[in-house]
Length: 288
Length: 348
Picture 1: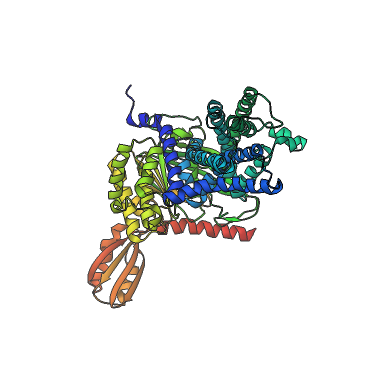
Picture 2: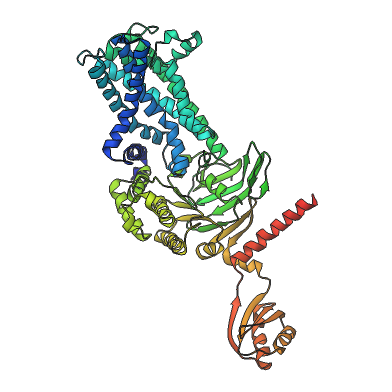
């Protein structure tokens, strides 16, 4: 039996949707100003965050700078750009599409899984964060003399841990997007609050060994902890206190926790979506 | 019919005893109903809309129109009852239903402002799997048809309300849906923009047999002009449904006519009242124009009524039959039910 044009086009619609979502995010991110200002916007936040940490460290250390610790801070701050830009924007995408553009309901009733649209929207943000990550590291090397040698970087490990890291970021982001569908008050601040909490416990700026016992246990079930650690090992070549000593076992933990967290996150998203549809929250405008 | 099914000849839309109850933490009012912890937006709605119909759902604000559309477009789950779109259960076949439908809501400033009109439409075409080439061709056709050809490359944020609504109509149609849901599509639009939307909806229906539209509106003339059949919903219940002419006829107990006469004569009214088959007669003299409105037991008595006027010395200039409007039907049904409800509440 011949496939009709409608059937044929619908069989490919999720790919089209993904592509269109990527394109939409790129347009909404980059089309609001001229390219120079947009570049400054992409780079400004992670660089200034890294410099704040460096200045704080310099003040605390009384000017006796340890480049290894400086490297630890810079790589942690650079990696965190992915968390802020990729994960943190998932709930904001839901909220702005629903409240600002009033388009969420139309996108939602298109013949794709809404989760596909959300993942598509995240893709350009990964690219933006990658640029910020690279520039922050370059500034660290050139101006702060952190010990990164371009030929010593373990690029294979960096690539693998980054790819797995993106999966966990998308997993977290999808779960927060689900929460944004059902939450009303405070939904805009949710990602900032959660991101702040993760910043403290995942070893982004200090080793997890200084955390209280229960927080350390929490840190060890969060894939971001292993991701940041493996990024440091790939870039700097040394490990952090409190983490497994071998890169292979650390990567194994990253994979296991990523599978666990991402599975839970997707289930959580679908539960939230179910409740949002059940309660009629998909097209509400809260004014918050 | 209880099973979820897809069968040839299924109605475009079918609802069976659909109820929707909203639960809230704090009290608020919904469609005039005082709400404590729950509000019944739909209360046993049963409708069948055949393919190819332009069906109107009429009701006041908060009557339950939008809630029904949300259920049928898979935005909202019904609390109980069954709802089918093209024979597919809305609770089970969400994605297959979405391939067949599109929706436009009025009274909102929706759109990704940063995109151009063309970009926004292209993006939605992508969501529905339309190839870029086919999408651009379709976009050109649609924009020309609704008078937005010159705005194709304009940013959405720069569009007026009317233009944005026309763009939204194009957004819904760019995927060539089988069933189109229009939720008060002309609310807040000026006369010209409303006319363009109505005209295009009508021509879109005529383009391809089998296309179906469910239109909700509280503009009675709009429903009268566009719809093959209508249902009137009030407090979440369907209080009447049928072809517009049938609903009007159902309202009209007597045949009503209006004469315009050349001159005033006091005897006309009394003579007419005593004439055979005349239920009532009322003479009006307004700005020198004399007219008589009469109600007859049935239209066959019009000849004898005219003879009565002639024999009384009157000269008939014009004669027209007075048809009840959909608005009168609506007011009779909704107004009465409100009075009943109010009376009921008073009694309690």
